[in-house]
Amino acid sequence: MGTKLIQEGSMYIDDTPIDKMREERVNRIESAARTNSIETNLNLWQHMIDGDEKGLLCAARFRMDMQNDNGALRDPVAFRCNLIPHHRTGTKYKVYPTYDCACPFVDALEGVTHALRTSEYRDREAQYRWVQKLMGTRQVHIWDYSRLNFVYTTLSKRKLQWFVDEGYTDGWDDPRFPTVQGMTRRGLQTEALKEFILMQGASRNVNLMEWEKLWTLNKRIIDPVCPRHVAVSDRGKVLVNITNGPSHPEVVSVAKHKKYPPAGVKATTRTSRIWLDAEDATSVREGEEVTLMDWGNCVIDRIAKDSAGQNVVSIQAHLNLDGSVKSTRLKLTWLPDIGNLVPLSLFDFDYLITKKKVEDDDNLADIVNATTKIETRAHGDANMRTLQKGTVIQLERRGYFIVDEVFKRSDSPMVLFAIPDGRIKTWGVCADVKK
Image 1 (cartoon, rainbow, N blue to C red):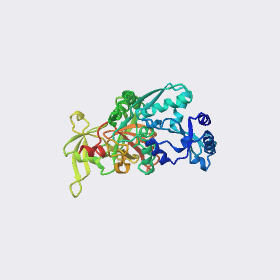
Image 2: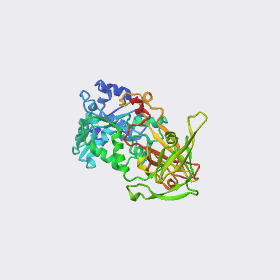
Image 3: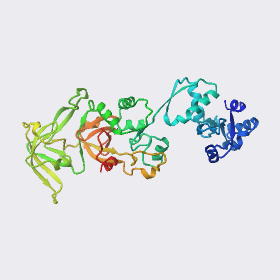
Image 4: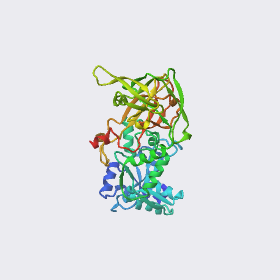
């Protein structure tokens, strides 16, 4: 193909340095190589095919119109040398077509009827048609639509690579990345993504979308079916002694999802000593009747605090299982004081960028978010030992999570990622903006 185009006079070989070539295209200055003879061009083309030192200095350019107002038509590069081994053909070929050259030809060759392209490529549509006409292929219909943009996010692969290279993320499947792999690892369901994209349609209007809409759709899919479990944060957790609690541990079966029987049942152990989150322990009052979820009511008899009178260190209570759960102010999650609770690392994530709308000329180093991951150590109920990687659950009164690393042993915590539910976060970039 390249040889044919040179012989027809539609392409020439240019050894102009890249920076000078770019400057000449901007200023509509024809390259000195544009007047090369066909013989000279064929000779340089062979050097490119061989991938030798001289060939590496050259690029094959379409002969279009250097005076055109559309910069995409000012003799764009059609072929370049690339000595990096190809994943299929190895080092067999040294010359490869550019995107501008390959796409029009391959689209027509492979039977594409409609090329769907974002509106940023609109200036290249005339170039696309020019190449197809030059190569004698059928014309492919182009349909352009606006690029999907999200707040505090860049979708540029080049800019996303910067986050990987600089160590701000762990790779392209990082749960903070707006890649399909990253978002599904964070708990986004394929059905939610499809529904969201279909709702947008093929609009040509440029919009800056909020992430909350996508995550709200996701919640609508996972909430009706995901099993419920319980976790208590390690930091500041408080032991409650129930004076009339079971003298020996009692195991009862409880539905994992009260409105979705197919989720199954879980074994809940009831003991006379239970753990509460520090926040819940701080919120109860002496003499108050509260509800222990999946058990019944209990009355808070005594609250012991540290020497400074600030933090609750223990609570004494007694069961009142005849009490009405409808009348209590607080419904508390809890865990039994037993040895087979599951150690957890709960991770929540923030935006990688502190600027709501990222511009092309923004320096990422100036707008990168230094704190994008928060870890909470906790323990979960014993039923979580069998959860598989990728399982979506709800930790009651805490939120939705997806299992990223399964339980292996007691000294190695199970890793769960928090799944956004569409509500505005109480920490991070958005919280700072609200302030």
